[in-house]
Length: 96
Image (cartoon, rainbow, N blue to C red; front, side, top):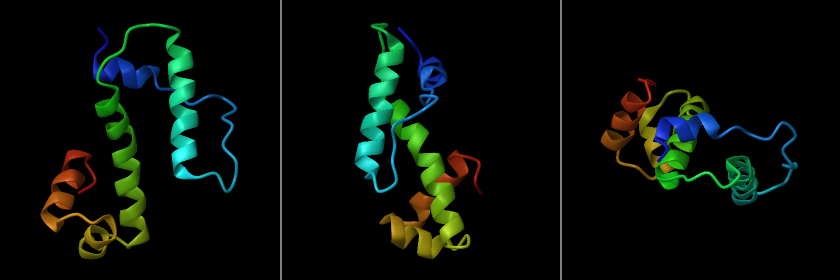
């Protein structure tokens, strides 16, 4: 079985992803996941949910913190998270 780290190493965006302006976030995730599974070429994989969350959460937090000019109160409200939870996640990803 692959570990999360090995799976993340295999999670490479397509060189020419078919993501267009106006495409929804949901569509972008679907495109990326289809590319990922195509690259696996039938190899066994586990913990995909955990891997995807780890890949998405860090840039989400980075972007929200930039948008709120590092205001944790505004960021926690925007994300719908408790401020303590936000701080924990920021520390987890080395963003604090």
